[in-house]
Length: 474
Image (cartoon, rainbow, N blue to C red; front, side, top):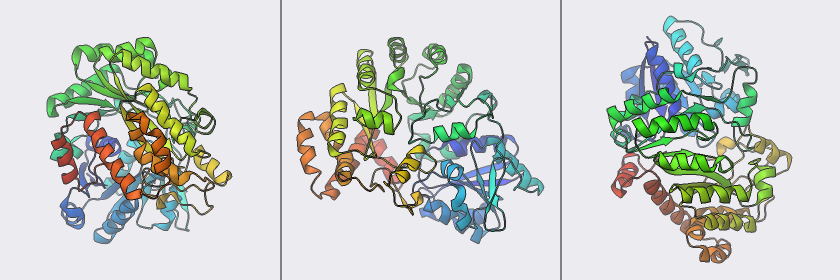
């Protein structure tokens, strides 16, 4: 039996560790979780010494992962252990591992089979460097990369996510909002997203877009409902409405057996009358969809959203008609965007009656077409390192954009113009003044209210989350 310790920075549920834990436990291994912002004032060493894990595992994205590098270093200096990284950044930008000798392995792509193989190899004393999907040091200053294994064809064969990993934390366990995934993969090719690169990476290794059976997903929801209680179900798939045949069958069962309000992510171009009606009749509380930018040329030619303003207007009208509220995702500071383009994004949201707003600053993620485009067109310095960037809501690494600082400020206060359209001309003027602390405060207030309303939480729930997570709720 191998002993595994997952380390996480912020207090939130993460499906990566939960699925890895599920397959590891099914294989007879022992797994625990340590969340830095919730456990012992970020003091990791006592847990390492107590548990003596054979494997320390960390899942990271491309933003703000210095904490993970520091945690791996502390683990290697405290005990004898194997450190394993997973997630989007190791998959698409693994070269960072070369500079960090205390990272032993990185998993590329979907990891259930690979992680179980690592646990088994550690348990038996076998070589871990030859396991499919794994990347390791080659001993000569480079990396050893093992080929990818085929995708799991039948998602029903994967055990349910191990929620005990995170639900040992009362704050997460008692949240009325519980998250689920219906499938894997996205058929769209947005340039700023990893999905395109991942689909190409798995070309010839199985069907990329896959779904669990409706019955399998319903079983998991009912199990979590019985064990922990659920106020709102959250489906976090990139798009929940792509496979309409699957969706309508699932919603029919959901209405009869689950009978709980839910939220999901959709695409505006996928929302037809019968889909919107089925969502409304089944208890859909909120849908979320991306507008991203109000300028159609940037949205479709630069970001490859392939979505018209008219499709967005139609989707909003259908949601209003069938009593489903909606949140829109918007980004500011896309390549070539001007302040007037940003204000157009605000106006489009105001026009369609957006209920909640998600706003971020455009970021060129390594491994995406957007990153290559920004480098090719001179929007990025040649020595730009995405790991030096910490947040999608603070600033932008782009250059050659005269209005960029105004767009970054507009991102913080866009909600004011969306909910009070008469303020839009005022916003176009005030963002030209360096009132950044005021803009940041306004954005934090909007985030608290968005979180409260979207997930159906009381203000006390929101306060408790902030206190128990040391302000680092993910």
